[in-house]
Length: 342
Image 1 (cartoon, rainbow, N blue to C red):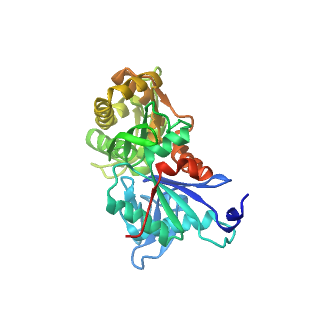
Image 2: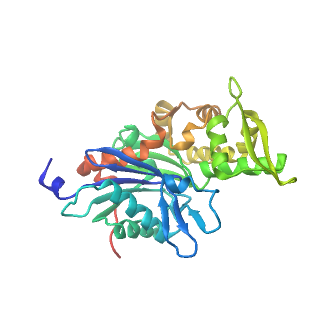
Image 3: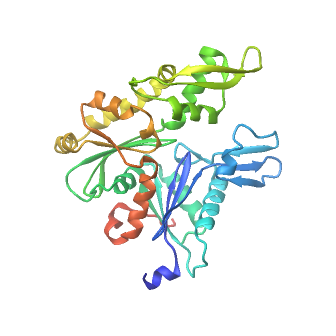
């Protein structure tokens, strides 16, 4: 441990639409919480942040509101994002250090300058000394253990809660990237709409998420699954339960999955031929929560005729990537963007 390690603690943050993960140098991932803030409507007082706030989603009495300050991977509610980041930093930096922490934050590759500034300002207000931004697909690639400094190309598809990032990486840079604001949240919305339209059944966001995790799929399964779901009957207005199968849920999310698949196809079409042959050899790496959707890799394999590999722990790849950057800051400095005050 060097002298500076005693003065401050470096932190990596995977600031996600659905979940925020925090990596502390020398300790690993120490926090993984939903990006949700619960506030009292009248006073604006914060009642809970993280898991406790997520449990209130869709269940809150009139006076309480559960807010997700990040939409499509970027800051939608500045003040709440700042409170969220500050709370998480406070939770992980236990000891009082002489200096504020240096923070590496992952951001979607399609983010605008204004959105970058919002992320940086939030982190600085929350107590960061220096803020560095890293693009999510780059962080995911580093987290998976890919050699991003090599001339041979590698393709990473990071399907999160708010955005799907498709990037071809070579020589510490992103050669081409496609960032679409269609991902896990849209899968949930599609399930809600499908049940409303076909069965007059209204379910909440948390139930839709649960259905997606338990029986959702992007490709026919060897053994189809089913589950009982509960919601409100829109005609009679009373609670109702329904048995639903993975075939129906696949139909519900098929259009949304198609959008992601189409974006992957477009990204491959824009890839320089030399790098395309590298991808043919090394395959595509699938990361993010969307990588856990059953059969998503098989669907992409069928559409692209390329080998598709799901990362070992897809949910933590980006946070681990931020962490590896912190552990070897000099080596990875080329992939970072230092945020300066304008």
